[in-house]
Image 1 (cartoon, rainbow, N blue to C red):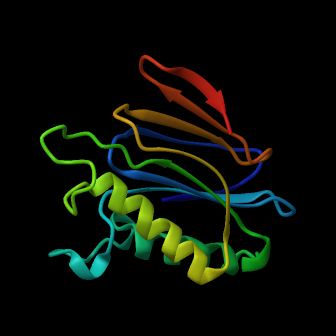
Image 2: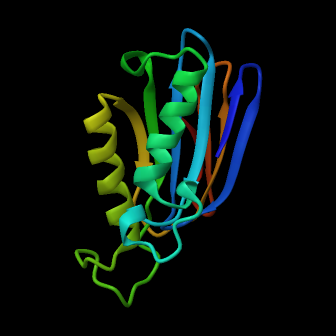
Length: 150
């Protein structure tokens, strides 16, 4: 996870089933970008890195933003990744980590009262994100599917 104040560009690469999480406070132009691998910290064997898990990553990111003077009610979220990268696993299986990462993110954000304003999730493509902290825009690059700004 990285936190920055605009102008800054935060980047994460190689999002497959992992979830790219952007939390952004537009008035203060402060944002955080996380790259979480697994849904819940309680299900992990090694729990030393809260940013490895979607639920604890969102909680930690929101706490860091609050330390910078941001109010939860003003924070916006954007979600990316959560792909179904393993065709041998049925899409509706509990072992579809990408889908579970996305579901846990939506649940955690809802509990915190943080609104998801855009997302680019699912599919079978890897993604690279470029988060412009000054504007709040995220450039999403996908192999074979081009680029888009959310």
